[in-house]
Image (tube, rainbow, N blue to C red; front, side, top):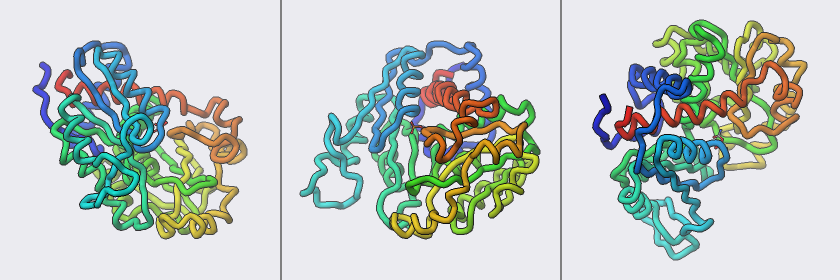
Length: 339
Ligand code: CP
C-alpha cells in the first residue's frame, strides 16, 4: 500500500532508522530486478548543483524519467542566477539569488529537491556542520535529498550498500578495507565517511587505512564504529596499507584531504607529498587477489587506481555506479510515497 507523501529529508543515511534503510535497500534490489515500475507520473524533482556531477545528475534524471516523472537540474551561475549560501549577508557582490528564496520557490514547482554543495572555506569546525544543506532543507517545503555535502554522500552510501550486498551474499563479518590514496588535490571526506558507513551497516569488519595525519572527522569515526558494532561488525584504523589488505574481501580505494590543513591547499599538499606510493596499484591489489575493488568515481587512472585494476576482474566500479540509479529510484519512490 503506497504511503502518503510527507516532508521527509534525506540528508544522511543514519538519520533514518536501521529498519527503514534495510527496507530501502531491499526496495532498490527489487527495482533493479525490474519488479517495480511507474509511481512518479507527473512528479517533478529539482536538483541544484553548486558543484559538478556526472553520475548523480544523470542517474537522478534517468530515475525520474524511468518512473514517469521529470527531473530539472539547476546549475547556479551557469544558466541560472549565481546563488548566495551565506546567511545574513549583504548581497552587493557577484551572487544574485539567495538559497532561501531558491529553496522556497523550487519547493512550489517540484515534489522533491536535491542539493550538491561541496565543502568551502578554511574552517572545518564550521564546514562540518553542513549548514548549507540544513538551511536549504529548512526553507524548502518539500523533501530534500543531499546530493553530496561536506560530511556525507548518502546516495553513494545507499548504492555502496547495495553493491556490497551483491558482491558478498553475506557481508557480515567480512573484511572491508577503505584504502586512502594519493591525489593531486585535497578531496572531501564525505565519500570515505559514507563508504565506511555503508560497510558498517552491513556488519563488516571495517578497516580504514591511511597515512598519519589523514584521520577522518572523530565524530564520523565514532558514528562508523557505533553502527558497525550495532550491526555485528567492527572498526579498526591502520596506518600501514599492505598489512591492512590481508584477508580483505573488498578494497574501497579513495583519496581525501587532511582535515588538520582544511582549506589551506599548500599546507595540505605538503602533508600529502610523502605518500605518493599510497595508491591502488596492480601490485598492491594483487596481494588480495580475491578482493573486489570499489571506487565512487570519478577516478584518476594510474594515480588513484591503476588502469589494469580498473579494467581487470577485481573491479566492480561500474556495477557500483550503476547501483546509484537503482538506489535512487527506490529513494524517490519512498520519499514520494509511491512504494
Ligand atoms: N560518485 C559521484 O557522486 O559521482 P558524480 O560526482 O559524477 O556525481
